[in-house]
Length: 218
Image (cartoon, helix red, strand yellow):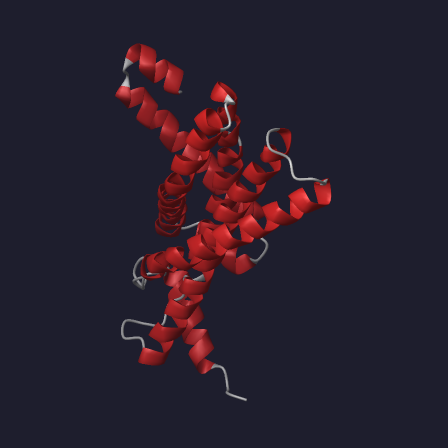
C-alpha cells in the first residue's frame, strides 16, 4: 500500500485500502475476543476507533521515552565501544516492544470502558480512573521491559558479562527498572484510556449498566 502511494500519490485509493484493512482487523478482533461482552464492544465503530487510537498513542508515548535511553545507548556502542554500524542492531527489538505494548494499551482501553449513565457517581469515576491507571502502568511496563531486556541480551555479543547467567540477571534488572519508570510515566495517560461513553453511541453499555444497577446487593 505504501509503495503504491509513494509511486502514484493516489490518496483516494490509499484511503480505500486503509478502510478495508481496518475493517478486516476489526472483524478479526471481534472473532478473537474471548467474551461476548468484548465482542459486542469491538463490533461498535466508536469503541474500535478508541481502542486503536489508544494503542497508537501509548506506543508513541513509549517511543518518546525510549528515545532518551536510545540517545545514550547507540552512541556509546557506536563510538565508545567502537562497534560502528553494528550498534544499529539495538533497533531490532523496537518492533517487538511496539507490538506487545500496543496490545496491552488496546486491552487496557477495552477493559476500562464502562458506562455508568449520564451522571456517574464520584466512586464510579474513581473506579474507572484506577482501572485505567493500572492498565496504563501495565502497558507502559510491558513496552519498556521488553525493549530494554531484549537490547540487553544483544549486548552479550558485544560486551558480555562473565557468565550467561549474570548477563541475563543484569538484563532482567535493567528491564524491570525501565519498565517501572515507563509504567509510572504512562499512568499520566490514564484519563484518556477509558473516557466516558455516551449511551446513544453504545446502547450495549447502557443496557449493561442498567442490568448491573438492578442486581441485588450481597
